Length: 374
Image (cartoon, helix red, strand yellow):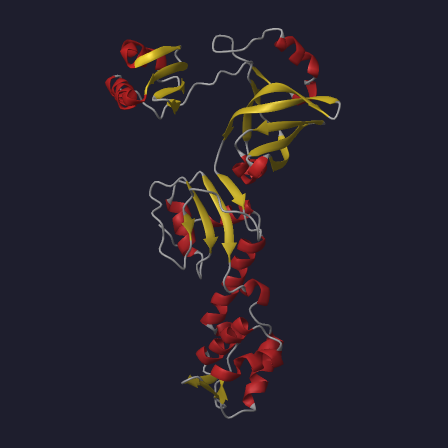
């Protein structure tokens, strides 16, 4: 329950709103001595009292909740009047409902249930993008749903699967046109929700733990949602987190520090050209000439470093204090024999998935048990 009061001339005047679990009138009515004026019902009340009695008012309400062992986490029950079919929806039913007005506590406005529809788009509106407007379709019928105060959930509403809505009907008059629109009362989803926030300007959701593998890991023991901000060098660590957690929502940002999926893992021609180039030099100082070599070979620096590491692993070159020397007596070996090369191929494949795959493809891969896992 919430009580909002304005204090003026040492008098506090305002109103209270409550949830079904707390009968606000029953809680405060026995203490009328606190008030100059008081009245209301189970869900709401109005009051005036001396400002000096605000602490006593707070204590009365807390005592009522504790004495009655009220579970404040309990949500109000929402009664749905009928399932809504968008293709059958016209202004005529709304005119009939308006004959039942005025609506209030004992004569609630009809609430309808909507499922099996598609969210065509979700956009924010109002000052500060506070509110949300959805365009939803079912068969050939398209309607707008207005959700006040939910502008920060535009990403969620536009990408959520198995979304179900509770709505009321309303008339929208704009530019001389009259249309029927839906007003959101509540929403429900089924199953884990996967959100793509890989876009450059996509905002991070508020109050959701963020996985940054370059930083200390957050405590995820009680988390029901996470943001995958960046990626570990190999995805085994991320797979373990996803498989061990009990997440209801996962947001994929998937920042990649070293994008090998853009460079590839090196072609035969690239390896041959690299070897031919460095073979001409008795010594090559890679600390100072790596960028020049990358520019000459037209190979990205991050890939070139891996290629040199592969040569070193295969004993084609030796590196000491940043100086690389070609081993001209090295045994001939296939690049594929390199463990570093094989790991690089896996990294490229994983990065391609995380950068370009759908969020469902990413999730399916992350929850897939490894062959040798317990």
